[in-house]
Amino acid sequence: MGDDRQRIAQRAAREVKDGMIVNLGIGIPSLVPDFLDPSIQVFFQAENGILGMGPTPASQADGNLSNAAGLPVTIVPGASYFDSALAFGMIRRGCIDVSILGALQVSVRGDLANWIVPGKRVPGVGGAMELAYGAKNLIALMTHCEKDGRPKILQQCSLPITAFHCVKKIITERAVFSIQDKEMILDEITPEFTMRDIQNYTEADFTISPHLQPTTS
Amino acid sequence: MSLFNKITDYDTVKSVFFDGMTLLFGGFGGVGTPPGLIDCLIDSGVKNVNLIGNDAGFPWIGMGKFICMERAQTLLASHIGSNPVAGDLMNQGKLKVEFSPQGILVERIRAGGVGLDGFLTEIGKGTKLAYDKPLVKIGNKEFLYEAPITGDVSIVYAKKADTFGNLLFDKTARNTNPYVAMASKITVVEADEIVPMGSLDPEEIIVPGIYVKHIVQSKGYNWKWKWEMTDNA
Image (cartoon, rainbow over the protein chains, first blue to last red):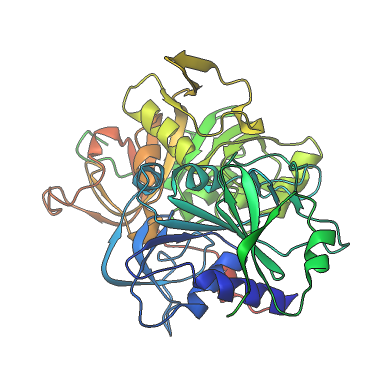
């Protein structure tokens, strides 16, 4: 499981290109910076009020300088601080090139469910609805199935929706899908899995890309 | 106390709180939530409070401390995931929780603080979070109407305040504080440093003192952050 999360984050890191403004959700997305190509320069935006967030401090953490998950961070040269209204202003306005969010379920049309499991887990929606609405590119990261094997990539989400038609790409430990014009396309399979492993554990209808390739890290 | 000297003590602030009040609080996961004013709220004994803020903190951090005492009757927030007690209280029907998208929530507080009658957005349309918000059709597009939020009392954490209540904030402890400061009948500020009027650079001031009623001196955070705790804590 831990390996799966690392693997998903590692593949997601390849979606982050030089010069991008990036917002990362909590959970698996927070692992993405560990795998970034060191030759690229990006700015991380944190919705609690930083543009230009840097890595975890080596020492001397500051209680008033944290990421949206509440963990201590640093800033990079050129960074700015701002209030929550401005943080979401830039998100809604489309200033974020790529938003990488954790997901509970994604539908064939790119509907995202990631804020509540009624009666069980009640995390709340946080900033996900606005990131889904405003980001130029939204990538959903999740393990391919529930622990009991039930698929999470579905014809229709059974959990309450965060935002409709917003996910452009799904990255799991087994596969990478893209969603274009409300259709799902299988682009990559992780080498140790077979097409059958994908088909049997993906409820959503998908087509296979003519350029299907193995996922490389 | 005068318009130009709003410094007071925590005992005086206690009398500002009342049962059933709507309380707006600054902070994001407890960062920027005023620790002394949270304790003051707890000591005041008030109950049935209607809370509005970004999140439910952690059980031992920020507004989470008060929520765990079951003295809030409603909470309007963007998430409560860091405070499992809040989720339990919600599932047991002891705390009525309304979720709002995070930026929409602060924008509603801002609308209340700047005297606007609300705004329109597509965010949340068709989801459970639309609740019974009115749908407004303009041309071929439908929007949710988001109403302004105002409160009886706001509590705010500032890095620096002058005696008039001009405020500066610290890094990510700013978050919702500037708008929370503007949106209630009575705003109480806890500041790390209180300075005489004239000693802040007017260009740097984030919230002008016109919105502030009371200022108290902070002793800083009195909780441990999650990352400061050992794994088995």
